[in-house]
Amino acid sequence: MTTEPNPNAKGAATTAPQSNGKRKKALLTLAAVAGLAGMGWLAWHLLVARYHEDTDDAYVQGNVVSIVPQTMGTVVSIDADDGMKVEAGQPLVHLDPNDAQVAYDQAIANLANTVRQVRGLYSAVDAGAADLAAREAQVARARADLKRREGLVGNGAVSAEELAHSRNELAVLEAGLRASSGNLSRNRALVDATEVGTQPQVAAAASQVRQAYLNLQRTAIVAPVSGYVAKRQVQLGQRVQPGVNLMTIVPLEQLWIEANFKETQLAKMRIGQPVKVHADLYGGDVEYDGKVVALGMGTGSAFSLLPAQNASGNWIKIVQRVPVRIEVEPKQLAEHPLRLGLSTSVDVTVRDQDGAVLAAARKDDKPLFTTTAYEKQLNDANELIDKVIRENLPGTRHG
Image 1 (cartoon, one colour):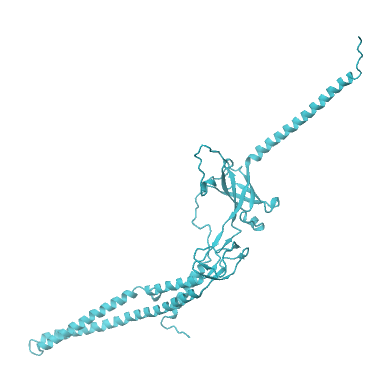
Image 2: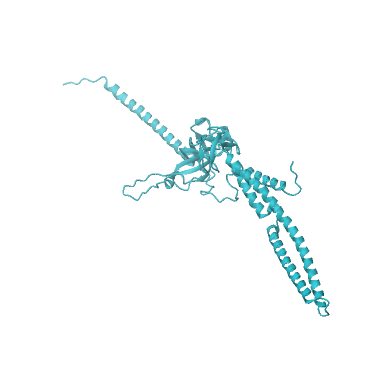
């Protein structure tokens, strides 16, 4: 039996090596690309990525200043509403001032009356000193007369009865001298080493004026800091008590970022490391420069109302997160304001390892935050007290 040759066999044998060569070339190209990509990723990781820690579990935080009354009263006017800009010392809410005004007027009258009474004490000291001097002269004269009469009794020039009268007169004058000296000592004890303004009775009356003045001024509730009003709760006619929250003020220049990093990301994080921040409000168009200023002292669960209890048989390990406080450049914050609670993403460059993990103790005792909104009230009260005292001193005319 004769087999005829297949005319396609030679062509098939030629095509198979060509097809394998193309496949091999494609695989080599793919392997080269994968290798280059791996090398690029490794280089990027070694040169860039390992020096960065990022998270999008970060939110804007800031100071929230509560506006609370310092005295009891009924709200008669509200001068600020949500979203309004207010300055430190600006009145926000007014309470009914009538009761405080009556108490203030009574305190002013009491101070004026006390000053005039104390002036009487000073005059009594002067009068008492003069009376004491006069009585001392009378006693000295009576003693001299008694001594002279005692010398004349022997020759009959002075009778025994007259001598007895002289002795009685001297005893009466000496008793009067002792009484006058005691009165002078008591009056002097009330005014010694004092002036009218520092005399204890005047100081007590002045303290009442100071308290009444402050209570009157506190019927106008002022802003302790400059900022924006948020969450107004007070209403007209509301009867408020000291400590009740009426509204809040948010100073937008005092904002920071609280970024919650995984505990595995904190090994190389240090205070002072630079941070790039992006807020979802502005997207990628705005980038803030910041720095790490504090690492949290515990995880969020550690400070929760009900801390986690893991001493159970079904315990499952969960990677914890620790808050990191990031300070943002004030100039950038002013150009692109943020709001409390906004979501952000942060990227910390951890290349620099010179910073501390824990913050050092402060070298000065200056407060971090302070207000001078209430200083003027006390200064004005002291000026008022000085004026009332001056007006009730000798030589002051009232027209």
